[in-house]
Image (cartoon, rainbow, N blue to C red; front, side, top):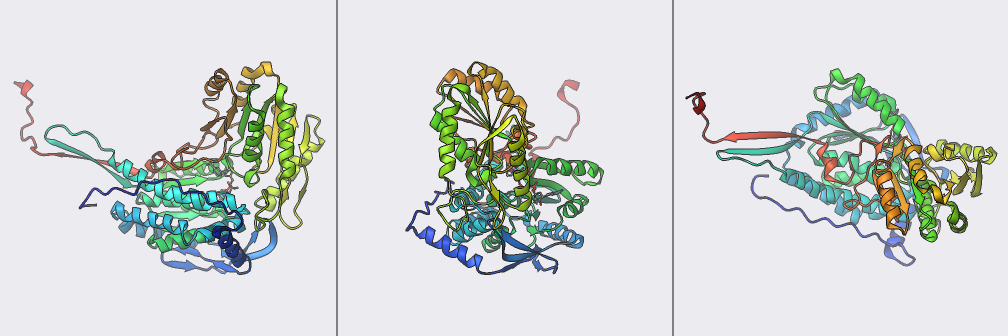
Amino acid sequence: MGKGFFNVPEPTNEPVKSYAPGTPEREAVTQQYNTYYNSSVDVPLYIGKDEVKTGNTRNMTLPHDHQHVVGTYHLAEKKHIDTAISSALEARVQWSQMPWEQRAAIFLRAADLIAGPYRAKINAATMIAQSKTVHQAEIDAACELIDFLRFNVKFMTDIYKEQPASSSGVWNRVEYRPLEGFIYAITPFNFTAIAANLPASAALMGNTVVWKPSDHQIFSAKVIVDIFKEAGVPDGVINVVYGDPIMITDTVLASPDFSGIHFTGSTYVFKEIWKKIGENIHNYKTYPKIVGETGGKDFIIAHPTSNTKQVATAITRGGFEFQGQKCSAASRIYLPKSTATEIINHVKEDVASFKMGSPADLSNFITAVIHEGSFDKLASYIDQAKKDSDAEIVAGGNYDKSKGYFIEPTVIVTTNPNYATMETELFGPVVTIYIYDDKDWSKTLKLVDATSEYALTGAVFSECRYALEEANKALQNSAGNFYINDKPSGAVVGQQPFGGARASGTNDKAGSAQNLLRWVSPRLIKETFVTPVDYRYPFLG
Ligand code: NAD
């Protein structure tokens, strides 16, 4: 940028469309869903300018209709990963020198494409690939992604504006260089917005990327690629590969030019990747930046003064929306004895009113879980709870995978605060409740803090300010996103920067300048105007 200090458009959160009967958005998304459902797409690898079809393909099916095929995708071999790395490094030569306003314009354009002509496409693709209801697709694939793209442009300029002081005769400047090398983005199935944001945020800061989406999100990842291409992301800036995640990761991490990883997914996978980076550390040209947002076992604790209907609504929305497959989903609940029955009865009424089925029927609130592995795991925990004497299923408990991977929203009440489903991330529509004695409020706060290895999100409900403040202090390290009298899910870009600590990740807060700072390496430039010509200081006399 040489000829002006440009201001970027002030971002505001994208309004969520209603999809109520009779609205144009409802008609458009339904039509698009049917078009996708009745056609077949063949998704290549995107490496440099090439769309690579290896011939070794896998089918893309729908979680709620697993015998129906909507297309295929091609699996990479090691040589394709090597080429993707070379393409990223080649593209870096020009992209890293691109003025920031040009990079900004591309991603602002992508946001406007999603808000307009691609909205129905990206939402319908997310309904198909990840079995999201239209509302869950809209708040993720459309609104959150648009927000990431627009807010990140603003955060980038905020970073660039951060400059050191200069003393008389000296001018100090900091330039925020992209990292030397390439970035590896690995993304999860559960958010189309995260899938796009992890490669895009690094690319926005001038980096080039090898992106490996989840096998269970490729159908909507293809729409992201189409949007980025139309917005003008140059060839080789974001290279997209799929296939054996271990082979791909091992190949990427073996490159001396690997300079950072932007990961979202499960804790175990991230720890394994971190270990491999450590094993390769002597090979790298630069210390890689490691950013990972991982698992959660998110809590709600209700004080005896809390409003029972509010707590119940937080459990049903926070625990069961998108079948509990949000990293922020509430899954361990602590209720006081005095109001537990009332809260549980409200939850049971809500759960009984849920309609479950395909997202193509817009009246369904619950759809299928992502794949058979997840279905089988959830079913086994539910079966175990049926057998265990310290657990009782008070709602749901049935499952059926004949057509889609459907698990009934299930509520377990346990007398054991360390019961398996109070500690293990299940990533499905299973909520476990532990009932504490009202007099044990302070003790229970300690229990909440100590029960799980994670610290992603959590919520406290109370009408008593002293109780809220006590929880605020006691749970300071228990959650990276802490909610007072609200459900622990549904973070909005620009308002609630998202991420957790402990085993939940590096807490680099997606949707904030803190995250973008990880993708730059500042260079300080000191310029002296009248340079000394004699080494002798005055004190030498
Ligand atoms: P996952 O860990 O199974 O997969 C995530 C990505 O890692 C995928 O692209 C997958 O192919 C890849 N992968 C799998 N095994 C790998 C290996 N051995 N080496 C390298 N890559 C590998 O997770 P998922 O099921 O897609 O997503 C759910 C998980 O993501 C949950 O644990 C959830 O809490 C977490 N998540 C966290 C956040 C957050 O912000 N903290 C957000 C979304 C999801």
